[in-house]
Image 1 (cartoon, rainbow, N blue to C red):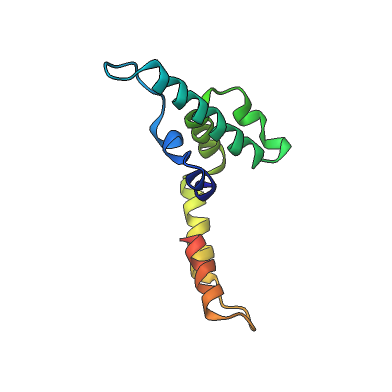
Image 2: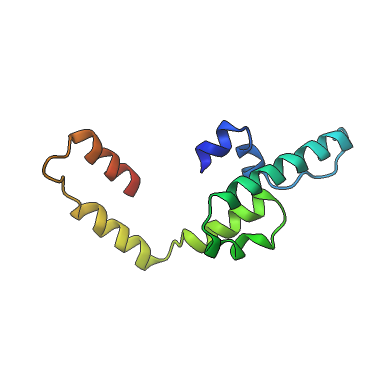
Length: 110
């Protein structure tokens, strides 16, 4: 998802949050930022299953949608960390797989 948003020049909107009203920030800049934020939220929502949409439908902007989905789907509890660690250390190369695909599997777990 980060790559899709980055390719469309929307990732900066997701990680930066809302535009603060400051001197030097014109209403045109704010409007452009809000437009990009709506586009980024739409891309995030379109990538989700219908059953996952209620998590992000009510929030405003891409920053909040990304944060809400991260909070829900990317749990950082101790049990989750231990599960991933065990899975990482017990992953073995399948017979017939090449080394590159095995390394890519390990990278996704790391």
